[in-house]
Amino acid sequence: MNIDVLEEINKKGFVEEEIDPTLDLFVEIEKLKKEKNAIILAHYYQEPDIQDIADYIGDSLGLSQEAAKTDADVIVFAGVHFMAETAKILSPSKKVLLPDVKAGCSLADSCPPHLFRKFKEKYSDHLVITYVNCTAELKALSDIVCTSTNAVQIVESLPKDQKIIFGPDRNLGAYVAKKTGRDLVLWNGACMVHEIFSQEKITKLKERHPNAKFIAHPECEEVVLKMADYIGSTTGLLKYTINNPASEFIVATESGIIHQMEKANPTKTFIPAPPNNSCACNDCPYMKRNTLEKLYLCLKNGLPEVTVPEHIIELARKPIQRMLDISAELGL
Image (cartoon, rainbow, N blue to C red; front, side):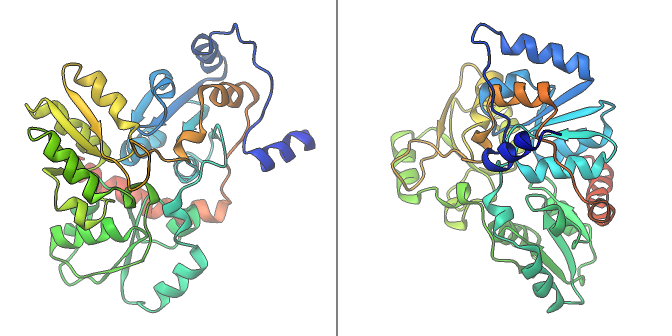
């Protein structure tokens, strides 16, 4: 591999090269997919163009399930780094590409594995459940992985006297503890996107839109969740907007999901919940590092590639597989 290209990826996170402005990238990406037997998996928080070209769009649970069963040779993961790692763990023989390897995660960064290992040692009789939004190394230290879709059900599937550490998201952990009535030991981590929603601005927005349903992701702080008409994963929020007769919704999660909400409900209005800064909506800067141009170059060049050490794959696969098995049993 060209050393200059590797240095460029290490520095910028992606391969940069001139793209013919007359190219129809949607057409070119479709060609490359067929040529390389590739599949594009995209998270709901990606930009609309990427969602529209993807073979599958979903939340962390759905994306994990798709990565585990695909027969493609190449998985292009339009999401963040931990998601591409999860795909590699579940399909180690596949080539996994990420349009921009600097698409990280503030929540994953809030839980360094070496510190979590020491934390875990203090509670040696506890079972460890980690939210999928964490590094491969952290998954390797876990007993079960969960997503926001199945966290409550996974905890409820365990014996009532089972002691549990839940990490790295303290807000999701607190929500799960409240829903299940279980006493969970929480790691003090959080997602910067879901932590900066403004209670004051949301209150004013609800006053201006009295008939709107306020829906929120469980990674939000409790003060925001208390205001919500519905709390759920990204898929849960999307389904709620389809099934609920309301015509207006205030949405407290990363604003990328609104693209799918609008496609599924063309006559309804969706208002992104405002953060406590000058922005009108709340975007994840990591998710939005991926662009259609980077996705095209990634597929064209077969870089950047996401790899995971074999010993980590072996350890991390077990808790992820346990999550997938429990979810299958529960019909999730």
